[in-house]
Length: 273
Length: 271
Ligand SMILES: Nc1ncnc2c1ncn2[C@@H]1O[C@H](COP(=O)(O)OP(=O)(O)OP(=O)(O)O)[C@@H](O)[C@H]1O
Ligand SMILES: [Mg+2]
Image 1 (cartoon, rainbow over the protein chains, first blue to last red):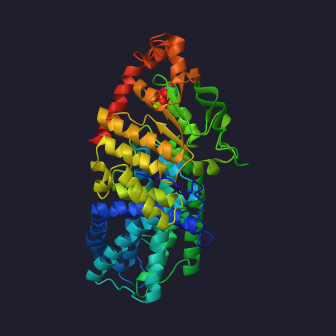
Image 2 (cartoon, rainbow over the protein chains, first blue to last red; image 1 turned 30 degrees about the vertical axis):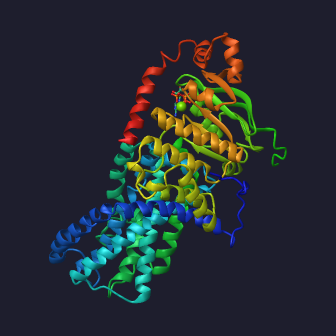
Image 3 (cartoon, protein in one colour; image 1 turned 90 degrees about the vertical axis):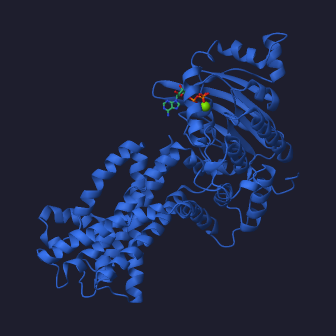
């Protein structure tokens, strides 16, 4: 059996500049997506929460009419918030897989490879967006069944897709940062629990900013989730109005993503130390 | 910057040091490994072998000192070093939630291998490691020996100049061990890969290594060819005797507890 006579140099021409970077990023995402295909159970368990919120909480408050929603029904108002919430809850525990894979020695294999550290972070962000898009399809189905006034224009849908992906990328990368800081599964679970609820309640997901006390409104305005919800609400629901403007919504989401990627890239190699 | 002369040292360790708090796990080490040779690191549990390998593979930043791998400085150019090395870690760590083929595929892509190159190399590697028939199975269902062979294939896919192996045959039965040894020997002959490996298995060191160093408490207590080391200790000495001579009774004392823990981790991965 002969394996010899190939080049030992490993210098392959790139078809275009950045091709390698892209290939490495997608390889990281692909590993995770292939795992999801081998075992998709997680996708189904993620569907439970939005059903409960929309069916129980949503139905009750829809009748109560206690919350000013600017001309649309409360169910219409909250559906985009619940989509954002299910994306957030799915993404915020994503970092635990990094700790888990570190304990198994898998992360070390990625780190000894020449792939730039940022591809390791971006690849994981991309794989988390795939999960979130599955959630989006499900929340749309559910909303349709509940007669929520959905917009189906092509640009509106494209905007929702983009915002869902950004939200998932932001919070899953934020979760990587936490994993790199706390390093152990137990501490991570603790912190994850502590973070999700404040992120959710200090946002406009299930009530408008106008109902909040001043201090909470300030917190909400630095919470990326608020901008995601605002974009989703504007693009998803017929007759809703934007609080910040779509331009600012997307700008803030991109800025938040850039910040977490830079920090996560810096911290990622420390997970194995 | 690149090392041009092929027959020189591919690994040069220069006063390399790692501290954990007050503990000095690796203590100002200096040694080198000649191109194409296999270098074995022996030493009791906690001697600092894995810590040394983690630094040489850029996973762990040194507290002091550096090393040159294929002429590239570890501290200044880790990204260049990574292109030159392969790593088989002490843990069985192929991804159990992916198939054998997928493990190799992802690796190939991380190393920037184009599609045409990938498929031939992966097919060859699976064939060579005798894993072709299980390549579509999840690695979680592999035996320890199969995982190890897969990991060695994975670490060699990009044809590294230097391969680091941390206890490559730990937890394997005698026949699985033999088959891993054969593969290692063959890879070395085919590609002239320089290998730095650690082991607790004296037979393995005798079988595979051109040079052996005995590490103890972060320093090298001895370093020579296996034959010369044995001669140094006594006429009828084995490498076991060499080990005991240079490290005291450490293997039976400090050893036990961590050994048990490691076997448990291994069996967890296998079970
Ligand atoms: N992350 C860490 N934090 C603190 N101390 C550590 C850490 N990793 C290793 N050590 C200590 O450094 C010393 C060297 O450990 P190392 O794992 O390098 O030994 P080893 O020679 O590989 O042992 P073994 O044969 O058991 O694998 C040990 O005393 C160990 O307890
Ligand atoms: Mg070790």
